[in-house]
Length: 130
Image (cartoon, one colour):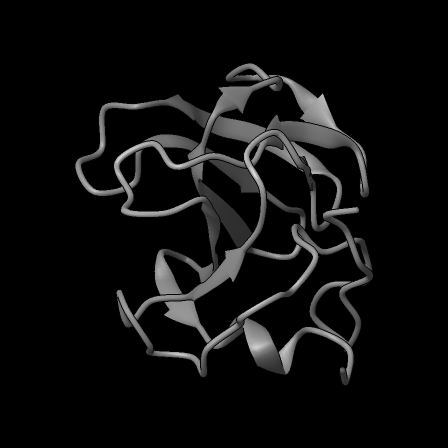
């Protein structure tokens, strides 16, 4: 199952992926974490919000979703095989929004970022202890 809670004071909802092979923040792209998985595993919304981007027009992210949350945070879900949420759609915490994939990536994974007003934050500080 590609979903787990996201805790802390910033996000209270469900996380995006199962968490296999999560490198430290800054590994790889330097803006988030890569979560290994199998193509087709569900990707879940970390928190309720509005989908502000759904597409593949941003180089290096493949099939990408960006969700804006009420607390000035946004969550980013990249390299999906299939996008299930549409731009402008309201999504619930824990809702299946995509399927994990390898679009514009060298392996099946979810690249997950949390941003505050466009600036990347360490998502591992917002995830519960493993």
